[in-house]
Amino acid sequence: MLSVLENFMFQVGQLFLIPVLLAVCILFLYSFWLLGGFIVQAWKRKGGGGRPLLEYARRNPGVDEDALDLHAHKLLELPRIVARIAPMLGLVATMIPMGPALLGLSDGNLGDVSKNLTIAFAAVILALIAASLAYWVVSVRRRWLAEEMLTARARQAGSTR
Image (cartoon, rainbow, N blue to C red; front, side, top):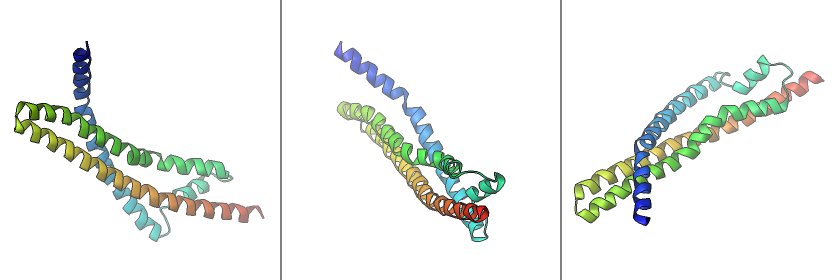
C-alpha cells in the first residue's frame, strides 16, 4: 500500500513539471516587461509625468485618501505577487526534477542526472531573477506612490482652505 501511495505521489508531482516551468518562464518574461515599464515611468517622472496616483486624483476630484490608498495597492498587486510567487515556483521547479535525478543516480544513468539537474537549476535561477527584478520595481514604486499620496493630500488640504 505504501509503495502505491509513493508511486502515485511521484507521478502526480511529475505532472506539474511542465506547468511550473511554463509559469517560471512567464514570470521571467513578465519581470523584464515590468522593468521596461518601470524605466519608462522613471523617464516620464523626470519630465513631471508618470505619477499614476496624482493622475487618478485629477480624474476623480474629491477622491478620499482611502480610495487613493486602494488604487496604489491595485497598482502594486501583480508585481508584488510575482515577487513572492516566483521563488516558490522556482523551488517547486527545482524539486520536481530531483526525483528523476535521484532515480537516474541509483540506476547509474548519469545522463538522466545531469539533464534533470540542469532543468532544476535553470528554473530556480530564472525564478530568482524574476523575483529580484519584481521586488526591486515594487520597492521603488511603493516609495513613489507614498510620495504621490503626500502630494495628493497636500493638494486636497490646499483646495479645502
